[in-house]
Each structure stands twice: as structure tokens, then as C-alpha cells.
Length: 306
Length: 277
Image 1 (tube, chains in turn orange, green):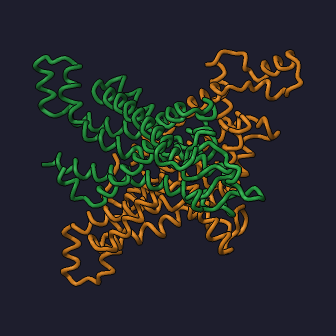
Image 2 (cartoon, chains in turn cyan, orange):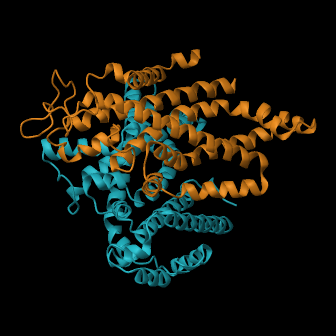
Image 3 (tube, helix red, strand yellow):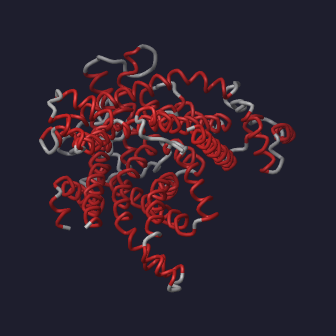
């Protein structure tokens, strides 16, 4: 277990190193000149040149990368060009809203995905099953911005139950969470259903039923416990992806999360913020996957890593 | 084939795909108006878009253009980008997966670590960043989508090549002195055809959604070319008063993505069973 953990952590560190290289190259490819952007329009050639030297932009690419990596390891993501603030500070201010929306989204996915998948598996082949699967397919195929805009139209405009957008009260989070979680809910339902069907076929389920164990107890104690593993993997993935910012939903609802920060930075060509934001989103994805891997053996003692 | 025909959802998907193809190819014949023309009677006196009427069956957009015509012509853009991007993603995924799985060693290590790194980026964030860097055009958008979507295909192909390599006929081919390329083309590629077909259809569902999302954010296909995501983007500030501007292109996106999804899943079921027999 310890050996596996060490190996997995090392692998994650390797991926993050790769991520830092890709992010660095991404910023290098941007058509804008950072020195000119900082100096402003009216700056003289000499000013731009001195800023360039100050930033180390005149040095060879590998040297620039090593400098960048060194700062990164010290937790320094640089300063925003557009807002005169540390990138780490900007990201920190976005964490609470991002976390709130991510958790609410995952909660919604589980709330609709798990029951729908369980019911579909138990009533396999019936109209209920088909209805659930139809919903799952449509959910997966509906783009978040269409879902979000329609939710706003129906539940904030026609029936003014929720605010049109923004961030603050618990009411604000409901519609964005639904928009984020609808597609995921469809996935969860499909995955739960097929895992349940696999487990329902097992001998011990038949034994439990033959023994006369209460049907609901069979489902929850014997089946669900074993069918929930693939769903955990999905939650792990979603934590990463959602924490990385749900650009579309944040833009539709005016939600001040990391996704919106990156999106605004891209429009302003605010390179340090783009780099920092992309890096942090990738970090969350790696950590989310790692968490899912670590939770597996806790839920299912049969899984042993060596 | 018969197995496929018996799958009701798959047939529904096929009907949907045909419908979208008819929209795309038949757009010039089916569209009642010029999709780019701004009709001066296409707006109310206050300058608002018109709701669906006999003259404009799906209403007009914020510039007084016929929405039905724009949605029909939008099918061309969405489908073209979706198919191009997915084709490119499948091709990259195939090359990377086969190279890593067949040649092993350093090639495998480098390629598979690269896919590990690529999976760490949320697809949309990476696509937005790339699209912003590369100045979007239809081709660039397709390329960007392919660049973020090949990873999962490469992983699946890689796993499959690893298992095919261990089968006797590949070993036998090696023992008989069959050359590398001959082995690849005659003995390995034929076994990947069904996987490629599934990704070839299923993936379009994803690429169409991604294109719509990029265009919605304004870094996808650029106006005046009508794309479904772009139409919704242009009408975002108006949609509470003119919900048809979101609803109809929205239906078109869902229909396209759903149809390719159903078709791909049905294809996977049919081919899986065929393989197992």
C-alpha cells in the first residue's frame, strides 16, 4: 500500500511537471508581448526593453522555463498584468465560489444519477428503465449553456423562484448546479445502472434473496455497496474537472469562479493569470484522480495495491 | 447489421443523423431566406427580433435575419467542424496508440506520458486557451478540438494493440519474418476497425458539443458564418424576450449530439457482440 502510494504520488508529480511545461509553452505561443503589455501603449522602446530584461524575457527559452519552475515550486505564480495583484491571491479569492458550485454540482449529479440508475437496474427492460436511459442520453447530449439559459428563462424569469445570476445566497447556487450536473447526472445514471446489473447477477445476491432478506436491504447493503465503485471514480474525475472551473456555466450565470477568471484573463491576454489558472485546474484534476484511487481500497477491501 | 437494426435507440439515432445531414446538404434548397440578409421588416419597430411567424417560421435574430435559414446553414458549419475535428482526433489517436502499443520502449514511454499530461487539462479550458492563441477560423477550431480530444482514443487503441500483440498470429507473423509495416497493416489494423468505427461516430457527439461551446464563448467559428453556438452567443442578451433564439439552435445541437451518441452506442453494442462470437 505504501509502495503503491509512493508510486502513485511520483506519477502525479511527473504529470504535473509535464503540465508545467505545456502551460509554459502555451504562454510562449501567445501572440502578445508581455513587456509591451506591462509598459503600456505610450512607452518608449527603451522602457519596453528594460522591462523585458527585468522579466528575463530576453534569455533563452530553457532558462526562462527553469526560472518559471523555480518560482512555481516556491508557490509564486507571478503578478497579473491587468490587475495589479499576485496571481495566487486572485486564485485564492476564487476558490470559495468554485468549491461551492463544484460540490453543489456533484451533489445534484448524485441525487439524480444514483436513484435513477438504481431504479433502472431493478426495473430493467421496463418503461421506467427506458425513460431513465432516454433522460440520461439527452442529459449527456445537452450543452451546458443551453441548459443554463433555459433554466434561467423558466425558473428565474417566467417563474421568478431563483435569481437570474450572480453569487451569494444558497438560492444563487441552485440553477448553476443543475446546469453543471445535468450531463453528469446522465452519466452517473448509466454507470450506476450497468454496475448494478453486474452485481445483481452475482450468486450472493441470489442467496441473500433466497434467504428471505428484506428486498430493500439486499439492494442497499449487498448490491449498492459493490456497485458504487465506478461512481466513486466519476466523482473523483468530477471534483477535478469542476474545481478546474466550469467556464460555460460560470459565464452564463456570472459566477465568480476560477473558470470565469481564466476566461476573462484570456480575453485580456493576461498571461500570468492564464498560466496560473490552467496550472491550478490541472492540479485539481490530478488530485481528484488521486483521491478516487485512494478511496477505492477503503470502499472495497478486496482491492489491494502492491 | 441485423443486430444493429433490432436496436430501437440506434435506429432513432440513425434517423437523427440522416435528418442533420439533410439539413446540412439541403440548406440552400430548404432555407426560405438568405441566412446572411438582414431584413428590414425582420425587426419590430422598436428594433426587437420577431417571434415565429408565417414569413419567418422560427422568428428572426437580433439583426433581423431569418432564424430558420441560419439554423439550417448552421448545420453545415457544426457538422463540418464536428466531422473534421473528430476525424483528425481519431487519426492522431490511432497513430499514437498504435505506435505506443506496437513499438514499446522509449516510444511507448514518451507517448503515454504525454497522454497522461494531456488528460490532466480540462478539455474546454485547454481548447479556449488554444483557440485564443491561434485566432479562430473554421479549420483552427476543428484542429483545436482534435488536439484536446485525441487522448482518450489513443488510450483505448493503445490498450487494444497491447492485447492484439500478444495473440499467436502476430507472434507467428514475427517468427515468419513478416515486416513491421506488413504486420501492422495486415494483422493489427483490421482488428482496430470496429473500435475506430465506434469512435468515428460517438466522437462526433463530443466534438459538436465542444464546437458549440467554443462558438458560444466567441472563440469558435466566427460570425457572420452561422454556427449554432454562435447564434446563441449573439442573442444571449436578448433571450429573455426572445427565447426562440436559444431554443431552436439549442434543439439542433441536442438533436445532433444525441443522434451521433445513440448511433455510436448502438454500433458499439452490435460490434462488441459480433467480436465475441
